[in-house]
Length: 297
Ligand SMILES: Nc1ncnc2c1ncn2[C@@H]1O[C@H](COP(=O)(O)OP(=O)(O)OP(=O)(O)O)[C@@H](O)[C@H]1O
Image 1 (cartoon, rainbow, N blue to C red):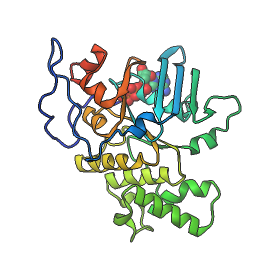
Image 2 (cartoon, rainbow, N blue to C red):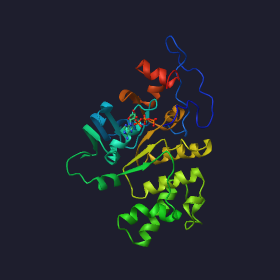
Image 3 (tube, helix red, strand yellow):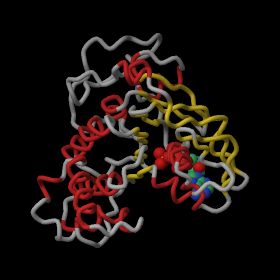
Image 4 (cartoon, rainbow, N blue to C red):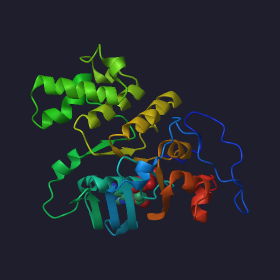
């Protein structure tokens, strides 16, 4: 559990002229993007949904944690899940790759599809399913192995032995995670010797090595300093060219900087979803406005 952090990862002034909201302080305006290239281009707006969540209810034992969630994540877009602590963001993220299966006493109703495939269809091969979805956690979790072996790990457990295939995957993934130049001369060194930010990028490289379609990120920057955070944010921007990303974040500025779409949750319910710029500058629900402007959370 992490407290709501309204501060930007790298402090920066909000743009002037944030629109006044009726009867309250101005709504926080979407922060400047990490790149000058327009973040949400028309291709993303017209892309088909890759992940489709329909009428989803989730129960931990007798306690319902998610209520009638309907949410589409478009191909090659970044979807930010925001909302106060305990509203169900991580639970929803874990529904996409069935990680909630690892928690006893969880019951799920409704459907999640990735592409054409029903994630909860009877007889589905969960291991194959999870290969299609990389996951990055709040705290980086490199294995106590070399940098090379960390990245090659997923391929090795798939049975890949060909050294040239492994070498290519390690290099490709480290380039994609922005780490190659920093580690290419010490691939045999322990991953535990990397800085926190480097370890998190290594974990991203490890997730990318098996070529997932979807990258699920659960507060990937919450343990990082502002510089390491901004590198990951830049990386997210690059990665969405090839992957579809769902990110849980408590950091409103981060959601505004990296995502195309935002979904705001409150007590297990999806209150509002839409283009990030719209959700941040002109939300439909009063509750969304109150949350993103820091009035509660
Ligand atoms: N393993 C579990 N067993 C029982 N209840 C759980 C479990 N995991 C989460 N919950 C409950 O489900 C609700 C949603 O929790 P979840 O961790 O998904 O929220 P969150 O929005 O990700 O919170 P945070 O931002 O603090 O990480 C909370 O009430 C939480 O206590």
